[in-house]
Image (cartoon, rainbow over all chains, first blue to last red; front, top):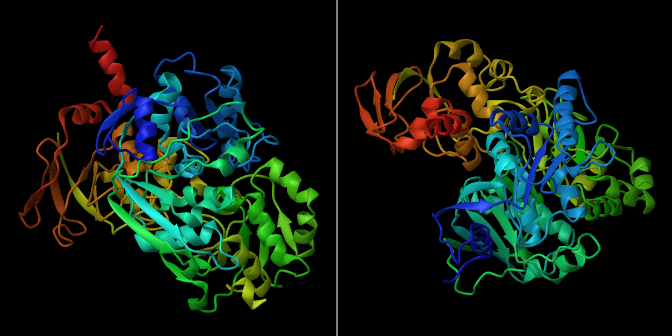
Length: 419
Length: 166
């Protein structure tokens, strides 16, 4: 029977030779993930179930990244619940502040995911690992608590949408522009419950960091998972990070798709998602003048080396506008160090940026850069819902790091070619 | 399992940041979460929902983050059931897991209005609007899902099953 990559991974983890869309399967989980916000509830479930051990201490990852370093007493209490659990049950992949970065940045970096894996996380952006040819999806805390006990969960095999990217991208076009363009095309529920499979010749040339950005935002089209075919570029990325080989599945040529969407990347301009929905997307040339109080570069979507390099290329020798705050947060300690060594920090500091500690930062409006009433921000993050980054009357525009850096200099939303 | 209540009506794509903004996620106590449920969108919700009620919404209810705090806040605020034309997938799982009844129903925009008294039968899927006497059928919930809801969610359901099998 012909299958997609996603179906093959689910079948392999359900102990079956094949699966088809709509089928409910019980699967083995290779890695279970939670963060400082979702872990405390999952741990409560773990205790309520009367468990006295996790299913495998090497297959659970706990990452404090949302409200750390602890922002107030209640969040400190939450982080402590996770930390004490991690030490009590000898969780191998618990990362304390200083080792930790954003969960979806550090797990790939540390080689904890390989192609063919099945990763379940109590965080909606768990779909990021699809960039590594893995099946990965978000769940809530109860599901995650049960997985920590049993190592298993149930899933419905999703139908798939194939998105085919062809052509040569223009200057400054990155993964963020491609995924925003795609979400604009599909709508926020265009892929609800489904798989988004990213294919085509333009994807073969895409840098791993761009693939992470795209898989990361699959959930913003409602998708259960987003996935790329694992290839040699991934093989090189993983070299030196892990001894696990992984399985390099490919979709069968006659695999079934619900829908095929074709995109000529040569026609994609830098994209901006306007308030208050990630599918409210416009090309940069159609944007009105939007003055900005704040620009944020970072997050599980765009907090990686390629993103920082793209921003630094534009900010070199320039300054953020007088009335625009520029916040940059590298996604992990390793990226932090690399950016420092490459001289990116000097460029950022000269441009008037503040550099934050590896964490989710202001993305979800809880910490490190919250917006006041009426303020407007451009952000390289993934959501621009009402009140997402602060006051319910603030506004968030989403874009890639090149547009973010250029906009910081201009003090309003604009592209790099305007500089 | 029949539920009665007056309606809180919402539109399409009600995301989890609207249900419970992230700045309130520094606690996981359900009553604390309930106090801030829909605080940006409808500041009177937490006060008035205490007397019960049913949420009726459009497409893609609960989209966005995986925070289980969202259905927990709605349930603890006093809401007995959420009916929507469709739900985002993580919210859908979370609602059953924590024991918040939800139903998917294809309904006309004006079938139910804010404040209407409605009756919901989870077993048959019938949604009856007492205000205009009209009724529609949603997809009914299978017996095991109703049993899970009656127990209060996945954890008490599993515990009860463990007791029953002894």
